[in-house]
Length: 184
Image (cartoon, rainbow, N blue to C red):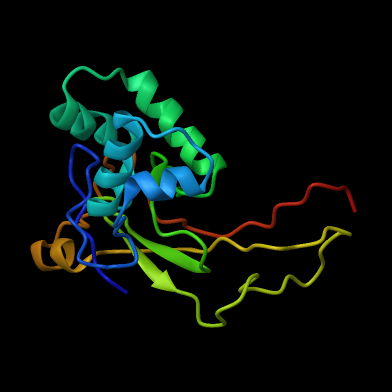
């Protein structure tokens, strides 16, 4: 696991993890059948450097690189890259969607309840799905998404998980309840 410090603006701390690095955005876009554009290259570059960033944070960083680019254009680029398999969208419950360029493997995430920092957690099993459900209800399961929740090292040192509710960050669950889609 590689810790990532969350940021108020949603732009994650730069990553040293080479699995997020995008060496040649132009080649990756072409290989995925996407047209090579400056905004697409910039989005991949930002996410390669700052995995687990929000769309708005990516848009701000892209504007700093390119000048005038609309937030909608960045959302469109993110959607196209997700559809093409170049970018993964993660949606921790109660938090803004986050994006990363580490795709094609079976990894999970850990999220800090205090600041929203998100880090990768490699799957123990290694092949999808990482969990085997007790009953699939007839579904053919090909993926399991696991999000671990806790307090990151920085917040733990600061004593930051003081129970205060921060916007966009999921709070601890007091009790787990069964969720059923069908009456029994």
